[in-house]
Length: 352
Image (cartoon, rainbow, N blue to C red; front, top):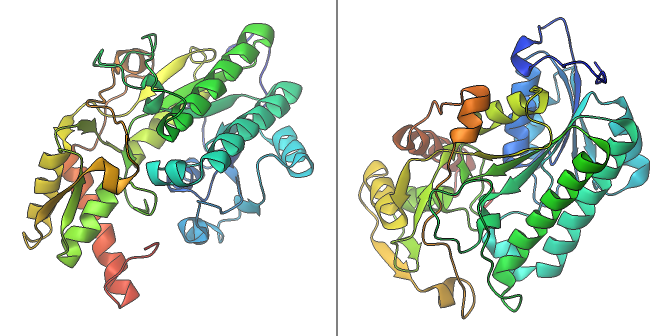
């Protein structure tokens, strides 16, 4: 159902099973992307996942290939010959393709910055050509070192120096936001920006520094649970199912285009307390070991002390309320990691 100028488009929840839409999800084989594909298929829609599998994994969407409404295209989101016809046929586009994780940002800064900016530029250009609704996922990283907690969408940002690779990811995400909002202001392209806060859940890999699956695997193996820094930094963790539910509503809500929304959970915990929780839930066999940032990443590495979203804007629009608290999130991740380790037969889960 293409957008109709001058008329309100139906919200995601108003669309019946008979009114199938065709969604394109870039980064559809990634952790969040694969869960979003599942959610859209469960609503009765058709989904095309576009992913070059550089950080996404085929295993994440293997179970969807038998669904006649799903297809996977293994290609970059910047290849015009592939992207153009997919956007033209889509009723809406979710742009989730992105470099992920602090470790990848530190190790491959050129790849990180170039791929993110080129990708969002390409997707925006094609969506503008065909007037397709678009949701772009950004990150809480754009708030930088701000201490104005909780973070509100209109707050000032505080970035570290360009000499520290740590801040390249935040800057690239901010450029994507600026470009998206520029399209909205110049041509009223129906684009929404979602700033995600520490999304976790089954299928997330710890390969690129994601803390919850890394802690879970270490705890299940009885290895030291490694906490970077002093452990007093705080985070708020959101279950991926809560997150994709919000994204699915935002792309179709008539009040969302041209706006930025924090998406996450505002239940705050220190990383040290998180490690203690994971250790308790995985059998209390692991020691908790503190690792200086200079050893975990690079000398001079800077991190946010607190990262807490102000969710009032999202709640006002879609009555957002997370269904998973932190204990339920950790139980879900640990259950998934335990099954993955058992299935591997060698004490390691997939992706290690």
